Image (tube, rainbow, N blue to C red; front, side):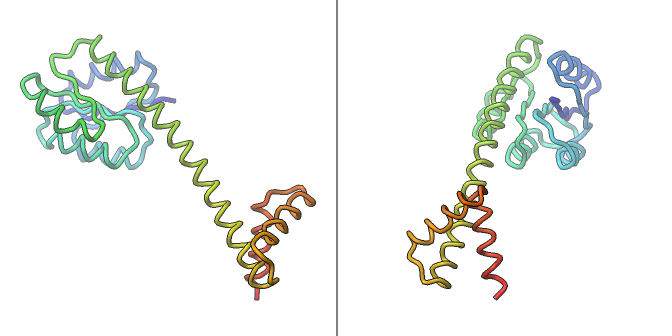
Length: 190
C-alpha cells in the first residue's frame, strides 16, 4: 500500500495534492499543516513519498526537505514559487529532493510523481539487497567465530574447522549457520 505525506499549510494546496496523489495509487495520505507535524508523522509512519509545499509560514521548506531526505527513505518532492525554483533546486538536488515550480500543472506534477515512484522502487530494491548481503555477512561472521573456537579448543586447522562445519551441516541437513551457532553455544558454556 502506497503511503504519502503532504506538508502544506495552504488548504487549496492540500486539496490539490490529496486529489492527484489519490488518483495515482496512494491509498493512505496524511496531511501535516507544518514542518514539525510532518517530522512527527515520519517517525510514526512508513511513507514512500513526502510532498512539501513552499513557502511555509512556520518552517524553511528547503531545510525541511533536506532534513527529511537525509533522515528518511521516502522520496521528497518540494514545490516552490517559480522565482526561487533554480536556486532551490540547486540547494536540494544533492539530497535527492525533486523540485517543481508553481504554478503547478497536473501533467508536470504527475511526471515528477512518476519519477519519484520509480526512484522509490529502486531504493526499495537496493534496501532489500543490503539486507540480503548483511544477513550473509552476519552468517559468515558467525561461521568464522565457530571456526576460531574449533581451532582454539580442538586444535584444528582453519581448513579442518571449515570441513567440520560443512560436514556436520550436510550430515544433519541443516544450515552451516545452525552448526556454527551450536558450536558457539557449546564452547560459550565453558
